[in-house]
Length: 78
Image (cartoon, rainbow, N blue to C red; front, side, top):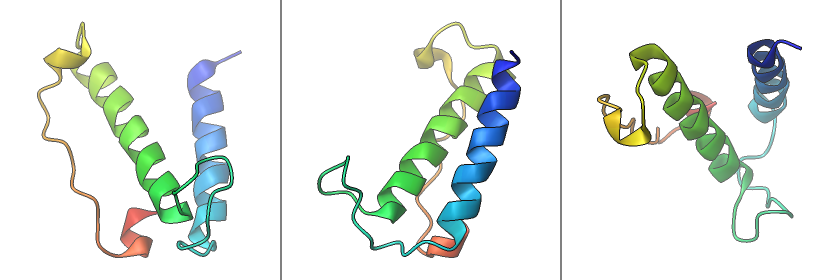
């Protein structure tokens, strides 16, 4: 199994679904969250791990890139 391929495939499925979802719809398994929050969270996770990979950081503290800001528009978030 190619773990990176699985992440790409599942991420693509998630973002295709998110593109047409109501960003204000609640997320039952994440009390207090809406779809927009979940999309942002997964984007942060993908950003974090891509920074680790690209910089070959040996720990999370070694990440040098600036954390991205959450876009104001849902389409930009997706």
